[in-house]
Structure formats: structure tokens, C-alpha cells
Length: 259
Image: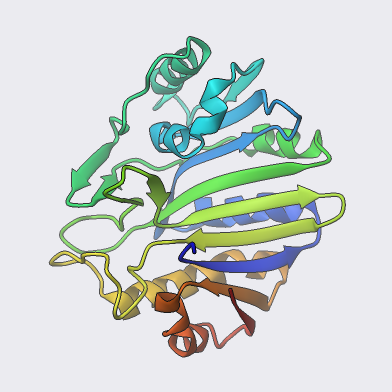
């Protein structure tokens, strides 16, 4: 059974999806490593890519690498990552093997840290992408800046079986039946007091990490006037600490679901 924590909230319109990205971009304590989306057609042959850690996305969505996209939209962050995104586009188009890590990532133990984040991201591109589709699912990969000796929170956790698992993944969904939904996923156990993920000297402990996750929710949800959260917990390690997790998010109206 999969082990993860999810936090979700209903949105009103596709503009709420944009508002969440805007809120993340405006917070100096939060960085966005990358944003991606795949068209929901049968062949998922249209892609949207922006950011500094696309290799992680390609590893996570490797099933799409078996297809040759008919269209790849890349949105550079000013001039800082133009060459990088053009090279990534060529790798995908030519179906070449991609690197495991981005040149902007630094490994430390089982984590990687990223030293760049989207700053001058043009929201018009992702807004058009969402509005042109009846069904859209946009993935946003944030990280949290901290004051420890390692300047940033782990962008993603690297498991020993070589899977690509982000510490935090945001999924913004537009669907004619489901409506508009904000979902945050994490299979990392840095949030748990008895987690198995190694924590390094100078990095925040489990309580600090969980408070930071709550702060992230408090930052992105007010712009969309949402105060109701559904927290999904899967796996005994998350079930065992459900009360602690729920208490951390006490400002919200919380419904806890255990799977």
C-alpha cells in the first residue's frame, strides 16, 4: 500500500489555480523549482514545461517519454534558463536519455537541493494552457527556503530504488465533473516524529517541517477564500500521527480521511 499524505481543497474557478501560483511566487520563503502539465488527450502529446528541475519531472512521468509530443511549450524564467529549457526540449523531441539530476540541483545524502527558483515567471502562458482545455492538471514543485546551513529545504526525496519522489508536489486540477481542486501530496516522512527519512544536522526537525507545511497552506489558500481542508493519510506511519498532523492545521476546518 502506498504511504503518503495529501491535503486538498476545492477551488471555484481556473483563476484560483493561477492565484495559488501567484501566491507561491510572491512569498520570499517559498520557491518554485518547476511547473509542468500534460494534455489530457488520449496520447498526452502536448506538454507544458517551465523551471529548473525538469529531469525530475521526466523521471516521474517516464511513461510519457515513450511518446513523442506533438507540441512542447516551454516558458523560460526571463533569460536565466532559456538554454536549459531548449536543451530539455531537444532531449524529449529526439528521445535521448536525460540526466538524472538538473545542473541546478546539488545532492546531499538522499536529498537533492535546488539553487534556483522561478522569479519572473510569465503567468499568461499557463493561464492560456488551462483556459484552452476542459481538463487540465498542472503540477507545481515548490520548496521552502530556510535559514539553516543548507540554504533550502529538500526539493525532493531520492529513494534507494531510484524513483523520483518530490518532498512536496502540488497538483491543480480542472475537470468538468470534479470541478477545480487544489491538492498537495507528499510521500516523504520528514513530517513525522518517527519517520524513516534521515534528517541532517542543521535541517529543521519534524515539528518545524510540519509547521512550515501549514504555513504554506495558510499562504496559498486565503487568496482563494478557502478554509476547508481534507487531509488524506495512507499507511500506518501517517495513521499513527494523525492527531498531531490534524492539530497542526487547526486553523482550518479539517476532515481527516485514512486510506
